[in-house]
Image (cartoon, rainbow, N blue to C red; front, side, top):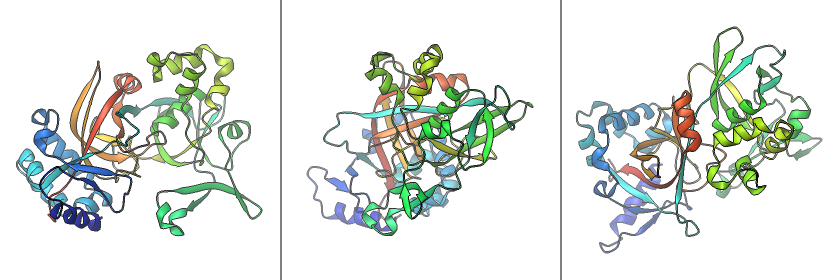
Length: 363
């Protein structure tokens, strides 16, 4: 990570002073940046700087954030003036949209709660799987450095690697995997997969936490888009709430719609509430999921998004990923736990602008 900061500094040194140049990271060839300034960040003056810096310090507990920001992690913990620290040691760079896109997109996710049991019995009949024992993961970057962001998943049949079971296969046949618990709703289980982590209230009154561990290798497909394309829900009405309502009103078509998304998530049991791919506990409205093909996990960003119902202008930390999060100016904001978080996350869909905050020089 130090190499791309040196590379960035060299580009700035020789770029001239006219129009700010577009900058491409050597290790992230698909990510283009424009140098910016804090004064250009929407509503920067309204930021809660202390809270923003606290989220950075929290993320500095992870190796990936320390790799990007080095000794700034130590200095941040000792800073007495949060705003002065941020403006003195960081430079914002606007993340450029691809030419084919007019707007970025911000959506939201939350920590759902579902009902479950450690033993299979009515109505708890739908298994919440750990990563299957026969799931094979091939890191393509080990042989092809240009494919370092890609992993191939499947299973061995003889000496051949074939695609792993899709959602429909897993529904009809029990997987070679340990089962964390059984749930009483395949719809709620599906949305738990979409969110990536959550809590299960067991029939004995206790609670367990679960989080993303792996995936079956099939590409994520949006069931919301499927319902829109089939004329079931108007595009302007699509949301988590409207999708769930439609499924509950059409029980005979639940499998048809859910199986359209062949992707399936596997979980692990956790000791605490929602944490993302970075391994740190997520902070409501400060943690986002990004596409790490374009944005490094652990990086600090400034986010600006607004629609008719909601407005966000704030420092956020890239602490999670998601199968549906694709592209450079694309983020999913963690909203927290509970009905209010669920309501906001389910309806959030706003145009987005993103800036990555990087160390000045070699600080």
